[in-house]
Image (cartoon, rainbow, N blue to C red; front, side, top):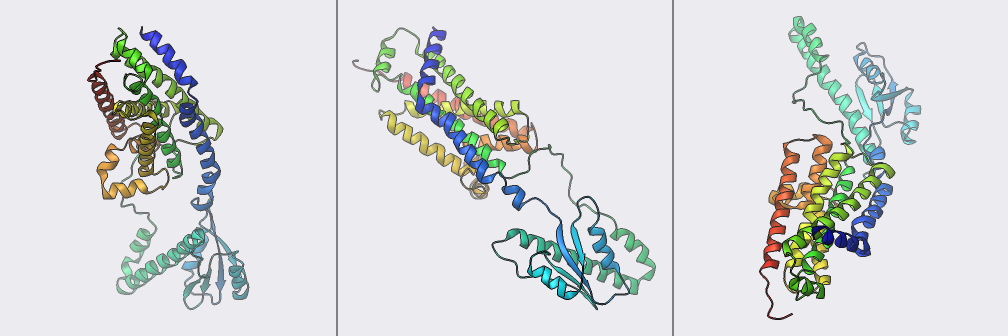
Length: 385
């Protein structure tokens, strides 16, 4: 009997074009739009590039330490600076053409000249701030060493040795070689949204086991078959079909769009499986409540799903962090946050306790929804059919 129910429910789900659209086609369309909108965003705004700068030496100082500093910063495979030595007039011309980001003027003192940064050009502002930091760091260290040389000349060699050392005050953490591009969070939330949209299939199961809502529900109620077995078979068929759609979604993102999720494909699929269980259970719970029709219940599920995705950062990237600072409990019970945070944890830390806790929360919420929905359906009786 289980296989009979499973087979026919699987056929029904595969014929429901509306359910397949929201779980399969809509995430693919939205993922493609994300790719064209965000695909090159990280390369143009956050990747590091060598900063071009002009050096104008008006008066050769006896202490040429600053020039040595600039030379050291312009060497190596990925140098910080690309220097152009020229006179003042040519340097100003290069700065006006935006060929260089600043002019280091070496005279009786060392100064930096930059054009006022455009508020809309974040990259230029960052590059200018880096040049200012180089000059500020040099002047701070130079002043300190000069004072020590005057007051305690015997300590000068020790100070110079310390100045050449790199000191780290943080604690080194072992991270996975994941994808540090922050735009990948939108794809994590996209998968979470697709998992929540599996709720349509779960709602169908509950509604078609209630005689006062559908004719099929009336037939099931007078059937001698076990209602628990029927629900379990249909739940399993929905899970199999919806998870298959999720596999197609992830394979499209993984191999066609080539999104780097920062972890192995099997772990991504395992997380999505728990998300599908959560989504179907949520739909089953909503479908079991009240005597309202299918259209209204679908509207409820869409609204709640999109709200959860909005709070997890699908529309606004930092929304989740804002919620975390204002009311962390919302993130603890938001299934979209739990799913996306599981992907994020795999990407950065790998399989850790945090990842296991997220999956446990998803499974716990799914069990609560399923048990509550079964209890509501089981308690219903009818005077006549």
